[in-house]
Image (cartoon, rainbow, N blue to C red; front, side, top):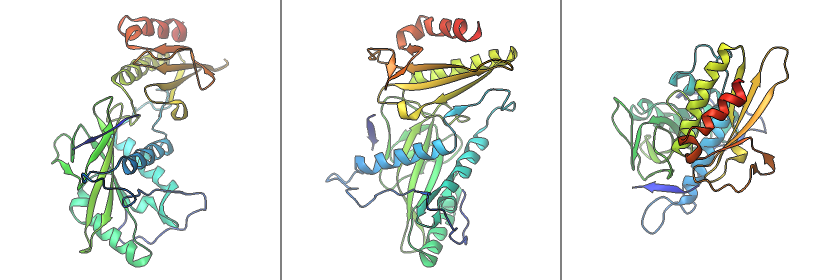
Length: 302
């Protein structure tokens, strides 16, 4: 997938937590080929930041839309960020130092100096580490992130994003401590997501349309006592194509599974992806002429 360069939590005095040997390191190589001759952030650093954000969203189970019966109150942006905060326990910013103490889900701690003080405290008690901000944004105009009713958030370098789709976004910004005890937000990757309530990464507007249609279908199935769970399969999501698995369960019946590939360019030559069978390949053409929605209704509701 192309990257376009568009020119918390965290306790102030928290001691580093004892972590298991299986914890994953959450770190961006800012000084390994970060700057190109033009002075802009390299694709390498942005690609790492994108992967870390995907890892965090996977750990937060953001790629899953549960059946309405499993989550009758729906989801809010507060729920979405709470899941990210909980997932941050699974990562370290350095061996033995938890990401959970160095991740913030809004900009206020950064502006009020809390991020800088936390990074300085960790540097004194253990070692210098990076801090991270997970921020919701409606628009990206690098180096600025925009969200409703809030001042724009400025990065020192740039904001990268996927070039095939617009906002809303979940942005992950990497910060480093400064000599005066403050913090500087260096660069960010803004991941296009389904909505403010669902931080499911999307690669196209067709992804969003399909996921919204499936959310409506979930409600229709729920009225008939059928639970439908949706999962975006990251390992099969390749440039230009998104893979979705739908699982239908009903008391006393065998679960049914459906695999859907979203292919806006219509480039898939066969109804298989990495060897797995696909039940339906969604393109702009069969979305606009109604064939996909008709297939959903006849295959899943019937």
